[in-house]
Amino acid sequence: MIEPHAPAPPGTPPPWGGPARLPVRPATGRFLVLACVFVCAACGLVYELELVALASYLVGDSVTQASVVLSVMVFAMGVGSLAAKRLRRQAATGFAALEVLLALVGGCSALALYAVFAFTGDWGGIWANGPRVLLVAFSLAIGLLIGAEVPLLMELIQRVRRQDPGGAVADLFAADYVGALVGGLAFPFLLLPFLGQLTSSLLTGAVNVVAGGSLVLGLFRRDLGRRARWVLLTANVTVLGVLASAAVLVDDFEQAARHAVYGDDIRVALQTGVQEVVLTGGTAGRPLDLYLDGRLRVGGRDERRYHEALVHPALNGRHARVLILGGGDGLALREVLRHADVRRVDVVEIDAGLVRLARTDPALSRLNGHAYGDARVHVATADAFGWLRGAPAGSYDVVVSDLPDPGITASTKLYSQEFYGLARRVLAPGGRLVVHAGPLTSRPRVFWTVETTMRAAGLRTVPYRVAGRDTGFTAGPDRSAGTFRVPHDWGFVLASADRRPVLGLPPGGPPPRTLTTAGLAADAAAAEGTRLGGTRVSTLVHPRY
Image 1 (cartoon, rainbow, N blue to C red):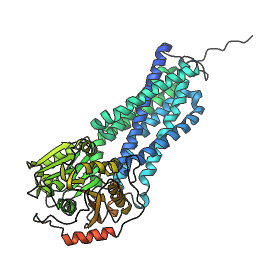
Image 2 (image 1 turned 120 degrees about the horizontal axis):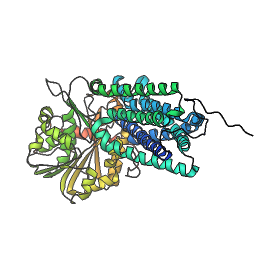
Image 3 (image 1 turned 135 degrees about the vertical axis):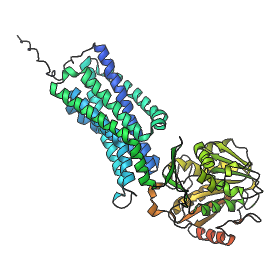
Image 4 (image 1 turned 90 degrees about the horizontal axis):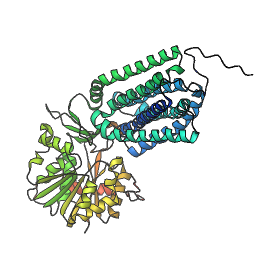
């Protein structure tokens, strides 16, 4: 006859696989475990999206960064699940420890990435692969911890009330996937616009540690020894204290980091809902610089040369009706409005906040000549691609494409064959399209891919380049290129659907300060001498940049 076991003394964990001693009914306990699964899944996806968003901003090329984060994280989740098998005998303790680590690592990941980027300067030299290494390290660590949650949560569910494995898996993954949906929607629509990346990650870490700690120290506290309860409670309170302290200091940190990136003369720094806009200089004789999402978009020392080269050759011909795609800063618009015979200018800019700043900021509005106050100007807040699809055919004599660099993933569709087909459709007979195609000297393949794509859309092209003055104004390329490797020129493509356009300056118009017809001819010859063979057309479904 088998003698029954003596009752375990208080504070002694039950044997592995035994039922948990719960302070509530099993049905309530099961609900609380699934609720914790829901919260942890939401937090995990927020960490994932935060890494993708921040890496895209700091490193550029959002497709590559998303691929790196997702693939590394999914791989790490598998490894973490296997590793967690060793913790199943102490499922409650192991899960609580995982949530403490996950909250600390995930909550502080954005802060750490931004701090290293801001305070180490350019990613050249020994830091050439710094952002990617750090990104992979955080993706790996967070993925390992998220993956380890699943086996432990499965064990805790079965400890509450035994059921068939298929049913338990279905319940667990239902709560997990719904939580991921909520986290995925909360990040872009609530957390990012209202709290920003840094505070969002810290808040997510706090929610994560509270959820995990509450479940274990509340529902499964009888499974833990006295010492284990105190250790876990101390760890949870310590992590909460670290995250709360960081949240209190995050504004001061962000300001210091911003000064480390942009310099000490920042005048305006705002998040418009579309992008981060930073203005530096513009007072006391200092040139104004405009950064969009960390990329130098306008350099006051040399912007006039760029914008004159972009606009004036395109106006060599009829130019009563002009369309500007992008250019919310108003500087290309300034050059168009110098021509008195321009009757109407439509500006299509996706960021209403940038246009508002160009109207109201004293230094920027002075630089653009208060262009938005001209009665001939009409502004549409829209994506250029979508807007062109609804624009009437043959509406414009000139289309000026002053858009972000094609090397930025979000802009790739604006340099596709489909986009140029839409732009060609809105040109009136004899109309011209001009495109900034990136630096020719440092990125010739990108430039000639743009030109090849425009020809594939039925346009006849004239490529040309204009040398800069090595001031750091890059007209849009990714900031990760670094100011030590800025291009020394800007490449443009002038095109027409009817015939090859004549590269020159409009007769009788206001003379540009930095361009001559002879100089343009020489620049076109220099550009033609760099032509690359074998470039392929970029389309929406097969981008080449």
